[in-house]
Amino acid sequence: MIRVALAKGRLYDPAVARFAQAGIIIDPEPGRRLLIPSSDAGIEFLVVKPADVAVYVESGAADVGVTGTDVLRESDADVLEPLELGFGACRLVVASPASAPYPELPGGKTARVATKYPRLAWRHFALEGRPVEIIEVHGSVEVAPLLGLADWIVDLVDTGNTLRANGLVEREVLLPVGAVLVANRASQKLKLEEHLALMRRLGA
Ligand code: AMP
Image 1 (cartoon, protein in one colour):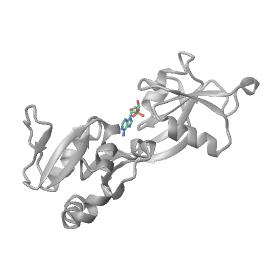
Image 2 (cartoon, protein in one colour):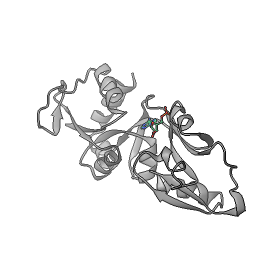
Image 3 (cartoon, rainbow, N blue to C red):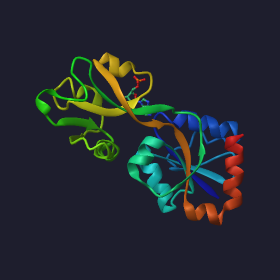
Image 4 (cartoon, rainbow, N blue to C red):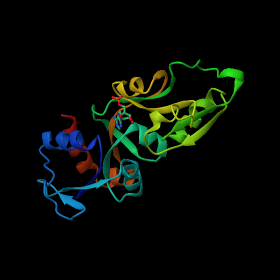
């Protein structure tokens, strides 16, 4: 049996579609079951919050998972990444108000950076030797500069519409982001044939 952890949210529908293309149909009416069977007796699914996919896979509670490279890099989980899935493309960027100078703030003030990605943001500025204060928030990041909570944000951008609508400009790309298949190290060794077969079906 291969257990697949899927992330709720944006990646869910394209992930289910990719498995369906591979002939693996997730039970559309699982009721209250959290371990969801599929049309393939050897594959079952579990649906968790995006940040938890890597936790389930790293621990071996799930053999493989579908997650975005943004939450994966933020977590630093020790998992294999055997396959890029080619959907969920976006980028993690630094953005700041169009009306304010960048990267210097008036008076040499230390920038406050609001983000859902404190580790990636901290690492980015630390590597460049730029002191910042990281403010961790869990949503609506784009409003932080408007409200004076932060000077800059580090957030995901797809079309850029949300940034523009909030008077922000993309300044730097930290990370190109996309959906990947992740795998538990031990599981891939112990069930190599099943992992290879699944990757062939998903990659085809
Ligand atoms: P956009 O206006 O198309 O640039 O989308 C930006 C908003 O959607 C931001 O609030 C992001 O956090 C979110 N977003 C964009 N792409 C993704 C993605 N692939 N996964 C999760 N959230 C995303």
